[in-house]
Length: 133
Ligand SMILES: [Cu+2]
Image 1 (cartoon, rainbow, N blue to C red):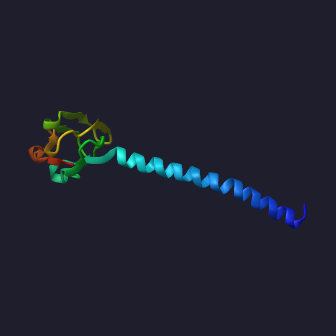
Image 2: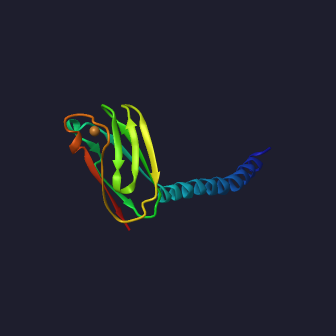
Image 3: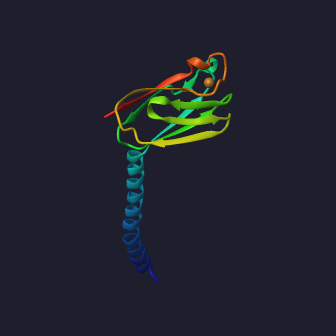
């Protein structure tokens, strides 16, 4: 092939590949946006009260949007309990994680606490989930 033919071939390949690659990329981007909108993922780490308690200790969720809480323990065994929402992880040993999936159905503020006696400051290991419209 001469130079002109190579250029024509390169142009043809570009014309054929670029649009499909960008459409594919756009699809992936759309899927990612959709995931972000459809699941509220929150990582929560339990530390004994002396070490800072729950991190974060304040969580905001949107009503009607599925939520996925991924809870880990950093130091000793903790448990994540939200009585008013009927959520309970059970004990979570250090280095392990519990996943709680639910759909917040009413707005308001809901206290969460540790359900495993973990230290002297256990009672103060509290936080809150605020569900907004
Ligand atoms: Cu505790």
